[in-house]
Image (tube, rainbow, N blue to C red):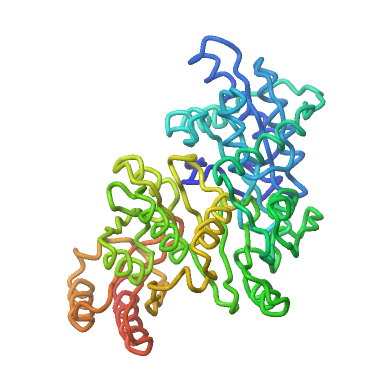
Amino acid sequence: MGKLFGTDGIRALAGEFPLDEATVRAIGASLARQFTESLGRSPRFITGRDTRESGGGIEQAFHAGAVSEDASCESAEVITTPGVAYLTSSFGFDAGVVISASHNPYYDNGIKIFLPDGRKIGRDIESRIEEDILAATHTKVISLDIDSSRIDEFYASYIDHLKINVPGLSTRGLKIIVDCANGAASAFAPKLFAELGAEVIAIHDQPDGRNINEDCGSLHLEHLQAKVVEHKADIGVAFDGDADRSLFVDETGMVIDGDATLWILAEYLKSHGKLANSTVVATVMSNLGLELALKSRGVELMRADVGDKYVLDALLKTGSEIGGEQSGHVIFPEIGLVGDGIMTALLLLRAMTEKGVSLSQAADGFVQYPQILKNVKVAEKRPFAEVPEIATAAKQVEYELDGTGRLLLRYSGTENLARVMIEGKDQAVIEALAGRLADTIGKVLG
């Protein structure tokens, strides 16, 4: 058995290893034993899930394993990932367990585990869980009813948390289209925006266990774009399955991605004296246009590796106030260490309404550079700098970009792929450059 935990917990096909019932019980039991040893008492866990049909069974198996080792467990049932992270801290739980596969199709699922401070569990705990699974440690099969007696209290507290962090926000007079991806945001986002005064039209808000992320949500913005134009709405908001990210559509039907969102919110923070170190954290994939726009305001863009874990590490290391990814995963450490798509939407609405501008006007100053990404199958992952043909070809590309573009070469973390990403002013030019470099990599390493 290899490493089960990736940068976002465990993710796999529901019902198959490691998300079969016996293994999930073993995960729950292992987590309970480890926390008992470190705390010197029985731990308290809270779980929550998105709308996948497999979520309830996985949650029950986790509870059974944890309870067999004397942990106490409560459920918030269907709730967003950041909702579970918030409840873990707010209600004094020792860990929060989210059963979700985020933007994946319904037949996948996953488990991610948060500590009370909002960070995910460390590699030490993950390794022990993997060892316990490998050792085939059997857990007692027990029958229990999941304790979800406090879900009304949990939901109300989470909604209050969202409102408290955008005091005074009123969306009165705005028309908002909300695409809930048939996921965890369905029961929260439309209601919240309406409570704040907006006229809300919700789409893809009728989850049936199998339609989560299906041709909707943040991965399929074309429906939201059409609805915004059709209804002459002020803004469209799209979530992914567990609502830890959000993407937007402006009043003209144009997409406002995570980079543009970072620009708008960084401008807002700076205007309020809250960008103390004049740094925004993004990833190596973030558009050159964001870097140039921020530079024009005297703000540095720090690039982390791809993944919210790495963005968070950089935020905490530098003491920066905002960071995120193109995918719409935005983190505000002052509010919490977990990206929250609903919170991001509320903060974006505040930036718009406070300035009295449309979303397209709020994004003024950010010009997205053309970007192309090519994936090349490789037989081995040798460092690019150590392969003379590739190093030479890469230097030639950078020479031809002549300071007006950016080249990024990296390997996929999960597949035998080399990724060639080039940005520049001219789409035809960067496509030609990317194609030439990809061909060189394919010939040498393919």
